Image (tube, one colour):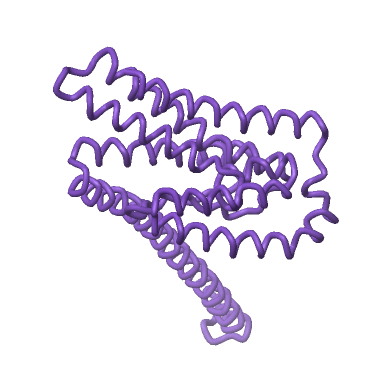
Length: 272
């Protein structure tokens, strides 16, 4: 016998079914909305990453252009490439330490910088991150020196040798033991008191070369030095500088080794 379409049982089943269907529809709509939002966030994130990459590339190209106008295109391009290799060393070291690194930003006639978005655990970890830049930079300068000595033509050899000398000098300057230069971050594993030794060296360099830019760097260094010295107690209490003796010795050997290699590289160029 067919059911009465107006019976209470049938009507109740239809109402419950509609409610269930409406609930499913609402849940499905909510899930779809969440997926749409996540998709837009993913797209936005990708755009931001691309923007950062584009900004990094554009800053490198701008530096190449300005250095090229000032010193010639081959030298300008080569110099920015040495800077990029230097920053690549930092980037690789930061990632190997499990920390987050930003893309390098190139500032014409000032250099380049890469952002470290997480504080190192201790001075030894900071040493390894800081040392990687000059290490890669010295290697790049040495390669340029070899090219200029053995493979370059007579017409271009002078440019390569000048570029190599500048690359070695850049690493040596960056190894001055004062924060926030790489040398200052390296010697922090030995003792942060060495920053006060590096500061007069930097000031003397600014006076000797009559460099306004170096003077500006010295002012920034003084500000950074004062800030870090104010917070030295908290860092010492946290054990930031409490590294084993062998790490202090390794930091001293590593810093001094890079200094000597940079000086030797400049000497080799001068002797050719």
